[in-house]
Length: 279
DNA sequence: AGTGTATCCTGCAGGC
DNA sequence: TGCCTGCAGGATACAC
Image 1 (cartoon, rainbow, N blue to C red):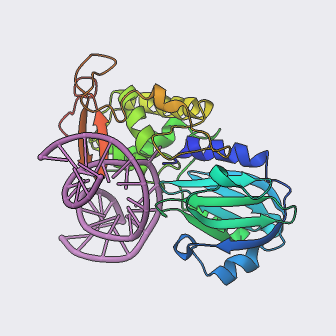
Image 2 (image 1 turned 90 degrees about the vertical axis):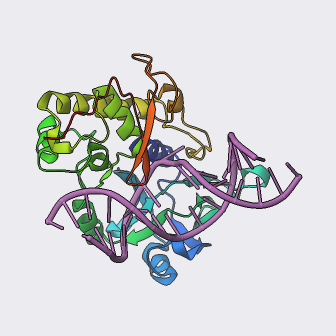
Image 3 (image 1 turned 90 degrees about the horizontal axis):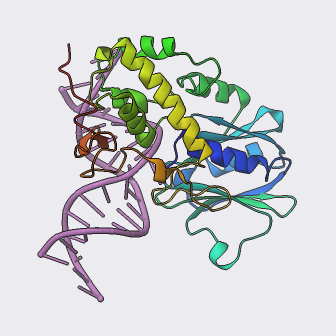
């Protein structure tokens, strides 16, 4: 579920709740979520203070003293839910996988129905190495259209696949890739290197505006996504193409199509996003 | 080297 | 009502 805007919304929620808390102990209810042994994870985070919350792509970082970080990837259905005291009744998470308990009595629960998410404690060095393997942040102040042009120029991948590759650009998932391609008038299966310079410029603009607008709306909830207050994101009402198979295109009334490749659905308007033969 | 496919897991919606 | 199939915001180990 969560792409960059959803992760950013959660980061902002955590900044107002758990920064300054110190970890008393951790409980791991599903070992497959943890990317290291429970003993190592516990040893690395216990009694450390949360100094800040950061985001890299779709990943959420709890920055601890000593340079340690807890890296959280939400997968498809992951949630990070802070509580000032143990939750009761309907407040209780349905699929808790990891609980971080603080000295104050507050706690943070990583809840994940499908358990595609992951949690891992890394040293500052390990984190830097990992981060360096990722592509640039599309909303970063130094990200420029030239970067997108040169990246696409050398790739024979379909452009939707290129956008989903976290090593090429960080944080873009299936919803916003589809939305940005629609707004730029580019068919999702166009070979990346055949996309024209003007089309890439349009894509650069649409990508940044879609992501920024989605952050303003608190992200997109299709089914599972919730922010740190347990509330849904409102961007679903603004989606132009994602999930609209069989419905009329907002621009031209043509029927929105769905095609599956790389095991993911892509949505497009055959009229507004024509497929041109690859060079 | 770079790409595409299958797989992990649970739950929900729709068809019969 | 119940059973079946397909589908879901992600990442990655493989095969080619």
